[in-house]
Length: 330
Image 1 (cartoon, rainbow, N blue to C red):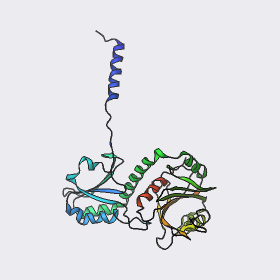
Image 2 (cartoon, helix red, strand yellow):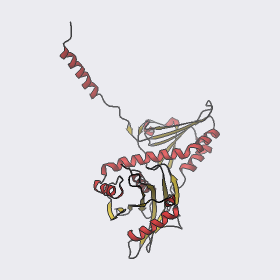
Image 3 (spheres, helix red, strand yellow):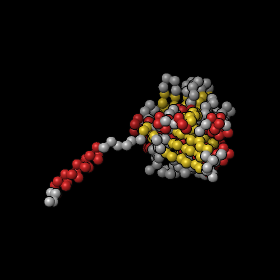
Image 4 (cartoon, helix red, strand yellow):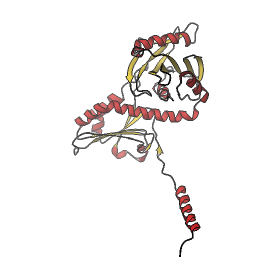
């Protein structure tokens, strides 16, 4: 006896609906403080000895450009046998393994292994010496990966509060997209120049964006950067008292330029340093990226700065860094 065709369709439809109603396997949301790496070791000797020293010396080094000592990352440590499901949800994990059965060091990186966003880095080696060699060879790449995960988390937080009107103004002026969250407003806008501010009772955050014609590679030099920056700040970014203005600190924390191929363009210069106010007592850190806009062929500088007196500033500056990395072009 043949099954009627309409009954076959009914069975298929019911099976489809049942499959749609099955609970979806969702990856957990990652946890952990901003700028924190959870190091997973096998024993105290690893964490207290040569291996732990090298990890602390690199990830715990001071973030350049801040007026007080703050590490690139805060490090916490746990033993592998204590790595419960709760700790596996940490956003940044760094796993140490010494296995004498291995013939050479092995490096593994995984994203979103137990949570999202998450970065898991593991070095397994036959002994401490080969482990340290592998770490020294790859540590700069590890830092880039952790920084990327931190920026991804922050941008996921900021996206729901994006201010479309400000983003449209940035696009009209610079032919580039940039995520601007709530709280910011336009303090000054001129052709090729924008100053965006966010003010709270105890902190100021801001972006200074400007562009000029690109002539040659000398435009990327530190001297040129400081000269152009100081000229524009003198004209357009006044301080709180009459005659005062923002400028570049050149003594306490000198500006430091680094060339990078890991910005939103294939080539950019990153500058970190301190700003201060001539004619007043204000200062704080800044971070800028200078690059050629592929849409307009203009040389653009996008900077974020912080004023947060008597408080740590690394996390607030990292927020601006994430937003600067949201820059994109058509």
